[in-house]
Image (cartoon, rainbow, N blue to C red):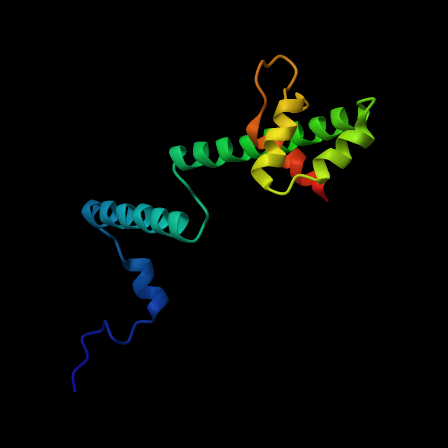
Length: 130
């Protein structure tokens, strides 16, 4: 069996001698970019700008509602007739009616606003019911 000299060289020797063309390098770079993007968006937790904005908006709305609920509870408890109002509140049966009671009392109106914060009023009603 005849050998042509190539099969007797080691892998490292063949690797050292390899000279890719510009076309091969270009395609290799493009494939690496595509693989990085697929891996990043699939498993790396990358998101588009629109998705990031939606997530940030949802988080800010939730945080604002939680803050409004805390302020509402503090205002409710600071009222001079808080004990009587709490007894009246606890006698209400439905969640919707409890939220309306909090909104009507004005405790869920945030500083600088003219109307009550609905998410804050719901959180306030939930906290007061507990």
